[in-house]
Image 1 (spheres, rainbow over the protein chains, first blue to last red):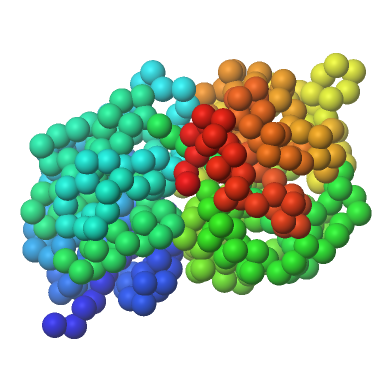
Image 2 (image 1 turned 30 degrees about the vertical axis):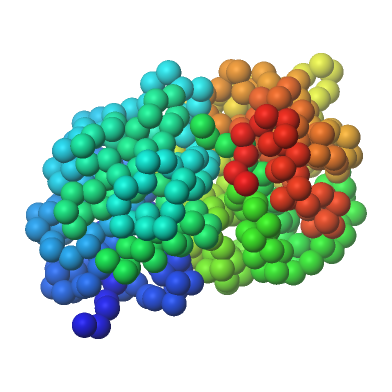
Length: 194
Length: 251
């Protein structure tokens, strides 16, 4: 089957850096919000930066909040994308798509918010991290998903929390694989091999 | 544990990398795309690209160059210089930039900080501040260090944070280009007062200066230009040196 990777474009934030990362891997991603195109894709990447409340509004306006949870192919949510796949988030008291069984909450008692920089991810247990042990990835966020039964990678900033989540064909990463150097590219490569 | 970041900064003028010594006497330091990919390979944690001529000459800057660099980089990429509107931010993000840095335009129009933060999120906004110590007080300067403003550094930094800046990049004009070390005392005050990450800039000359900026200046990240461009300090060995001093870095 021909591989067509789709990057969900719902009119918010920086989707270009994900597209560039796919180009570097010798793949390519189609930026679209078209339902049919998304349904027919071999892999779906759901990026996101910005404010959760606004992002979810944009998503809902295109009815993508009902489309995405029903997809059958591998789906990868990145950063805010991952957070919107959770039950809900404290940011703007926003409801998510409820794919992951966890509520996103704000950092407390940490020296700096947002949490910006490279952090080690551990306890990697998913084909997403095939061939990897513990690697550094790049994070920028103020809200996080606590540990849950769906956690497939953890990291530590004030508390230990989910760096990545998985439920069936749905994957979510809090960090930015597209900006996490070689290891980030390997994670994207692993996703595309699913 | 989040690691301390080492950030090479490429000052861009006319499509080339330059570095001013105390903001004057520019010396050509090489092709920006070459430097950017080299730093990415050598272990730089982020890259900053500043169009240093933008504010002064009202020049619409360098988007094709930004696009080419963003395409090649696999680390976070920040662009600053001449950003005065959310439309410009949108264009830069669309060209593959991860964060924007605003300086003079934020002082001239503080509302711009809130607008960018509310539209694109604090995570993509760095407010850069150039300041100089005079009569025992740190004063904020704009326009490439030419115009003194009414703001003191601390008051302005707090306002930036309250308006939604995601990080603060502080350049000490007194230290910039001297290679005598960073403004650690003031950096420590900023780090203890603010809750957003602080990027230190100005004064890097030796690996020990970087060690001091993290231990004494309590900075979250350190930015430098010429010591990296002219290979006086090699990033991989700098990070090994910092790791030996028990400073968390990504190796």
